[in-house]
Amino acid sequence: MSLMNWTQAELARLRDQNLLRDRREVHPLPAGKCVVSGRTFVNFASNDYLGLAGDPRLADAAVAAMKESGTGARASPLVTGRTSWHVQLEQALAEFKQSESAILFPTGFAANLGTVAALVGPEDVVFCDRLNHASLIDGCRLSRATFRVYPHRDVAALERELRKAGHYRRRLIVTDSLFSMDGDHAPLHELNELASTWDAMLLVDEAHATGVFGTRGTGLLEQQNVHSDRIIPVGTLSKGLGGQGGFVTGPQSLIDWLWNSARTQIFSTALSIPACAAAITAISIVRSEPERRVRLLQISERVRLELSEQGWTIPAESQGPVIPIVIGAAETTMQLAKQLEEQGILAGAIRPPTVPKGTSRLRISLSAAHSDEDVSALITTLNELRRRFPL
Ligand SMILES: *Cc1c(COP(=O)(O)O)cnc(C)c1O
Figure (cartoon, rainbow, N blue to C red):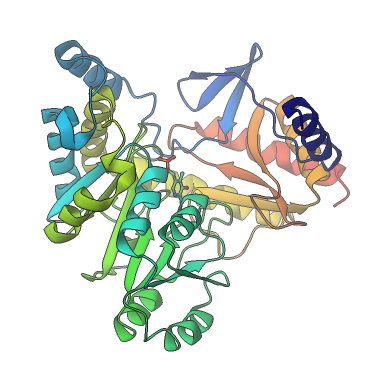
């Protein structure tokens, strides 16, 4: 069969179902704005929660490091790729998360994939929230452990599964802390209690929560005051921290084990030097400028409240900077996103297979960099659309 034939047929099928994804070229600007096809937009579809991706202090740190040590790490970390920049970043992360040690990965995706597969294998069982990020799901599959998916945030269903899992060598529960498509939080206390009762490990992916939640800005485990030596926290440098790369923090033995077994780290070139330097600066800003996360959560609550009053369907459990507006049909969702674009607003339009059929949604992601005027424009524009669109 020719490659052209089947790829064209598959793409036509996606187009018919309104599920074809196409790409755009984006030129980032300060203050949460960007230019696409010559037009300026306010970007409510980024994960730059604290506005650090465009912060000149990160860029300066990256440039200075590059001038000193070059761009690439030149090797995988166990060979010669773990430079003094990497070591400094590991130490900054361990201190930030009040952990004994830290290990870096090329991306958050690689951190999840490599860590899950390093913690469990064919003699083990892994329990996965149905709405977990693709990287956790793929990690579960890759591990070849028995794979149990439990309904979203359903601790009773999870416990029923755990009860039946005593004969496995090891048990691992994996969860996002802030779920990126619904904006809601994992029941971390309950999950930790179940892990303790049923002798399981608990991997918590803080990708969207790092820099955003908690008095010190380390995430939802901190905000919900959940601590245990059974917990494996994973994070990314690519969202709130404005850079690139993934990481795991924890006790020395866990980190040493990942250095010896996480294949996405062992067999991949170490993070680039500017990425390390930018992240070191980002962590120090998160620590010294808590006002960024305070503002972010304030504007998030303002938008959530006003949009609910306008009559949009916002999941009641959603909290924080990710605000899903559930529309239903993929086609209507795309039309709404287009209308917003005409008003200079970019919002995420999330369709199957990313979310279940019939729950397509707009996703508003706020940033501390957004101005009050831009937030007001978002609220006003959505109010006008709400009146015009028969939903
Ligand atoms: C974005 C995301 C990741 C992947 O992180 P990257 O650094 O972008 O690869 C992992 N988990 C969750 C929950 C995410 O939202």
